[in-house]
Amino acid sequence: MDDFTLLPDESVVTRNDDVTYGNRSMFGNGSKGALILTSRRLVLLKKGMFGKVKDVSSFALSDIIISNGQPQVQARKRPFNPSMDVYFTGGEESFRFTWPEEAAEFAAAVISTITGQEVEVASGDDKFIENAAAAMEKINHIANKLRRTFGLQSTETMSADCPGCGASLTGTAGETVKCPYCGTYHTF
Ligand SMILES: [Zn+2]
Image (cartoon, rainbow, N blue to C red; front, top):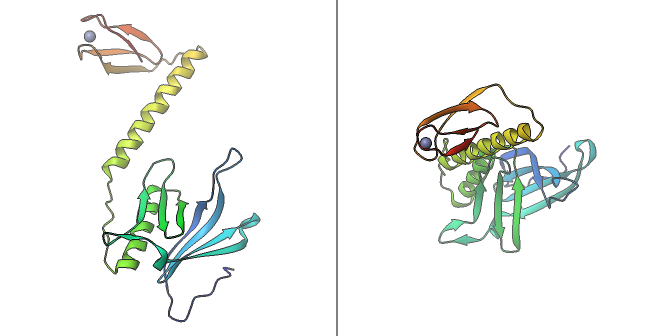
């Protein structure tokens, strides 16, 4: 059971049952909770063991800082750490979500509730896709480095453009090849 009570003129706008909040430490990712947006406030149900609600925190929407007519609510659509950052007169609160889209949709809902205006949520966020692609590339690079370190050569043929002249080069993961045209070395 959620132990919080709606006020007579209060209604639930949206909720997300898988939110993380609080400081990350070397021991964990913060605490788990459910975040509820009502017509008046953000309610954080802090969950303890077995998902039982152990504490309820309330943040009034009227305490959110408005700057140039814009409520200071920001979705950060980082692929590995999507969050909604809210700036209250008393300080900043950050709620982390599983998916970037959830953070964006929740932030849009908070802003619409405050301003009474619909907020567009861009579906194909270019920046997000760009970041995800960069992250994938990095993982690939690390995987190749590991294969090299442990002598596990991949037999999969890869191709790349020569960094020196742009010619097409082929090789296997971890292999270093010399471009036959310009002599530049490239490691797959
Ligand atoms: Zn070349």
